[in-house]
Length: 123
Image (cartoon, rainbow, N blue to C red):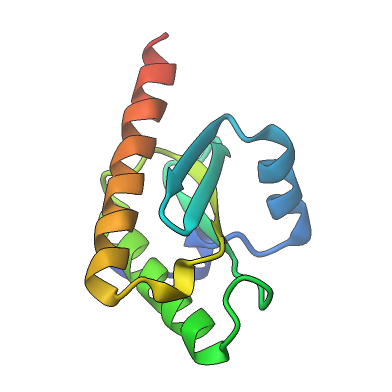
């Protein structure tokens, strides 16, 4: 994948894609207020799906901000991420994260995911 866009091929689009990740998650990465599940996808790039429920992030403006910042983070890190499907789940407390803290959380999560995937590929 070249460039830094976020086209449709970098997104999980169908319920089946999400279900596959939930059923076959080989990697699980936690952050404050966030959790990412991932599984290899057989492609040459990562794909992202977001699950941000109203129960955990009450206000629509907070849900949209979380989605926007997560997409920006994955867009900037897509070259270093392994070929996995990622579902990011918002947990309680995700709406309290400010922009800088959220970027740090996501960056750390992507680094841990990359490390875990690399370790699994060599084993």
